[in-house]
Image 1 (spheres, rainbow over the protein chains, first blue to last red):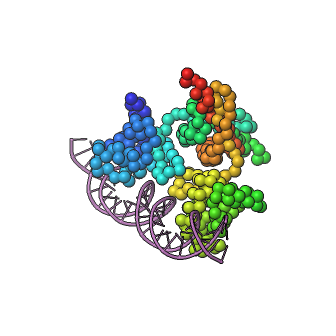
Image 2: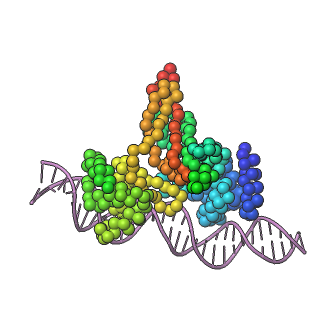
Image 3: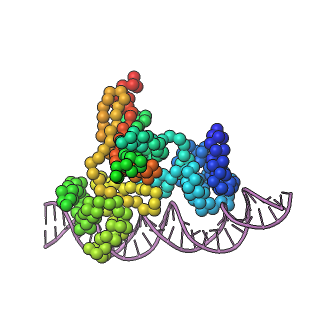
Length: 145
Length: 145
DNA sequence: TATTACTTTATAATGTTTATAAATAGTGTA
DNA sequence: TACACTATTTATAAACATTATAAAGTAATA
């Protein structure tokens, strides 16, 4: 399925000088294939069969590494544990009110907003739009003098 | 300062049948006056002087009560502990694509999106817009037959 | 003011996440 | 391919926020 994504991810790791271990390979694969937002413990349990001796710390360590490289997002909903999401390309726009410049901005958490809206209002929610407005660094620099 | 907000909040508690204790009064007052997003521990420490015997559990219990009544929102950024925010009246719209009906929808978490966007892009972020699109219960009922 | 149910307190328990140190294994090089 | 170097894994313990429990205390109502 998502062979390409996994390959890209592994390349990204290689380019950043991060070693590719079987555990890292498996965690990435699981994140990509599961299409869900698993907790660290979900991942730990899911890979228990393949890696009976893997430590929970390994899962946490590697999720941190992936997050630092930008491959994974940590989502904190209200509940006890974080969820981890392989980063895809959906994004929003941040718009400068002075010069009109548009900058991409990635934020995966708004899926949750749709779900909540659907739950609260009874709507069948299909999509949403969001733009963020502000002043870009260049324009706010000009204002200073 | 925010005398009115505190009074309203206390009335809201009264109307919901929640008892007003000195601790609850103080926690609400602190939330309203501090203008920040304190953690439970922040609140606990801030009220240590007034209530030397107050238990941390009291802070957590009451924050939960306030959240259930809708006075307070719990914000989970990535770090270890939740922050708590006194709720004001800002809201979003859920729009029916069939009949155009607009339903209010309250979701305070997007303040976090602004902060993140600002951090990532370097913009001075001022505001944002979001609408959620879907089909309202009435219209999706009609579709069925 | 007396009653009743809700709250607070103090403490222990739970559960997630991080720190530590020894053992192990990936990667570049000869 | 084998070596050496260093990052990584493992196992364990520790840290930390949050929740559960039960006894003592207190707000609200008549």
